[in-house]
Image (cartoon, rainbow, N blue to C red; front, side):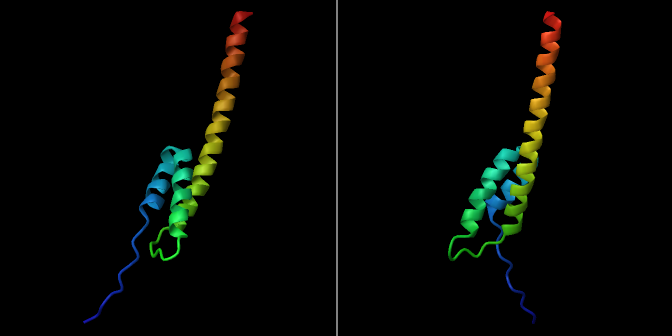
Length: 86
């Protein structure tokens, strides 16, 4: 009979951080930082370093995109409001 080695359990914070990076990018970054700290702790046998790393990348890019969007939106909004007052 063939025995299969048990795969390492995936870190929950890494998985949740990866999912959150698509919906609330800043939360994804924060959760992935905590996940990386847990994964780098001595004696931790959990998997998920790649998930945490990509959650950070996606979260940072998403956060920058949101900041850019709000800067453009506010500038257009205040330009429109300023144009109406004239």
